[in-house]
Image 1 (spheres, rainbow, N blue to C red):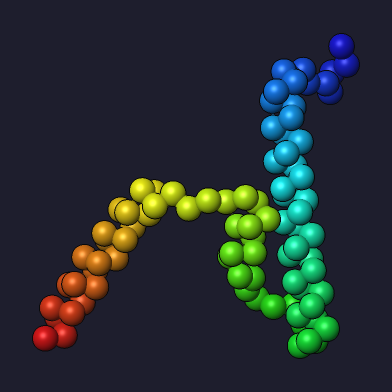
Image 2 (image 1 turned 135 degrees about the vertical axis):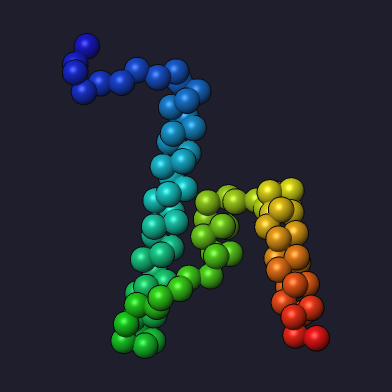
Length: 85
């Protein structure tokens, strides 16, 4: 077998192809957004709507994943409001 060859199961290969396809789709969307921004404003935008990228990558929110961050935010805002009063 050649030195630069990797052997993986067929199932994993299918997953790799699917991931690569999603990444290429996301890159194409980003390039299209930049092209549109250049046509409209003469330069690339500095932000892209996260929903566009989420859609391209097939991302689905996992609310449990964000619960801790939301809890910290609410605590921080609560402390901020206490110091203002």
